[in-house]
Image (tube, rainbow, N blue to C red):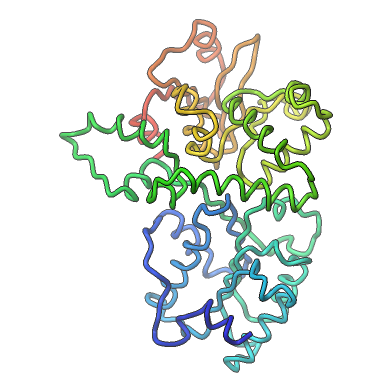
Length: 389
C-alpha cells in the first residue's frame, strides 16, 4: 500500500510537483473559492474532460502558493484495482499512519472517481464529522447529485466541468487573433464546432481517441454498470440521440426504431444523461408542462456529436454551443402555437440562437410578444463572447 500511495503522491519526496498542464483559470478559480469552507466539493463531468488535471493543478497551487506541507496533501484514484479491497476510511488511515498525522491535523484529500467506492456518502460523512479534512472528490456520473441518502445534506457543493469553450480552445491551440485579423475568428470558430472541446482531443486531433472515449463510456459506465448484455443497441441509441441534438426527442419514436419498449428507451436516455454525454432541457411552463412535454437534447461535446453525425447543420451545432455557454443559467425552451424559441433562463432572459440566419415570421412575433427581462438574438461567436464571455 505504501508504494501505491507514494506513486500517486510524488510531491511527498524529491520536491516533485504535479506535471504542468494548460490551465483553465475560471474553473481553477471556482475550485479555489471553496478552499476556506468545510464543505466537501464534488467535481463532476464527462470522462476525460479534465477533472483529474484540475485537481492536480489545485494541489500545485496549495504547495507553491499557499505553502501547505506536501505531506498534508493526499491524492488517490479510487478506480485503481490495487486499492479495490480497501475502503476510503482504511486508505485515509494508512495515509495518516504513514506520515504520523493526528486526526486533528488538517489534511487536504483529493479523491478521484469517488463513485467506484460503495457507500462513499457515508464514508465521506464520517471523515467530515470526525477528522480535520478538506475534501475534493471527482465523479464521472451525476448519480451523486441524485442520491437519496441524506448523509451529505448541507455538507457538500458541486463544481461541474464542461468541455473547453471556444476561448479555452484557442488557448489550447495557442492561437491569438489580433483586432486587425478579427475576420479570421469565424473560421477558427467553425474549426471548433467540428473539433469540440475534449482537452486531449483538441491537443492530439486523433479521431480514434474520441471513438475510444465514447466506447469506454458506453461499455464501462453504462453497459457494465447497469448489466446491459447488448452494448451495440446502446451505440445505435446514442447515434439517434446525436442526430436529434438541438431538437425535442420522442421516446416512442426511438423505441419504435430500435424495437425496444418506451420504458427501456427512457431508461437508456437517463443513463446517457447520468454519464454527462447528453444534457436534457425541459419545456418552459407549469410543473405538468415541464414534466410531460418532450425534452430537447444537446450533446455535451460538439466533437463527439460530429463524430457520429458528420460536420453538418452548423446552425444546430451553434445552438448546441450556446446551450453549453448558458447551461449554468438553467434554461428551458419556449413553445407556443407550434413555434419555438430556443432558451429562457432562470433570470428570464429570452435567447434565440440564429447562426447566420433570421427568425421566421412566427418566431419574430413570439419573440417580440413574450414577456422577459431581456431578449437576445445571438448570430455568431462575437455575440456569444459579448453576452456570455
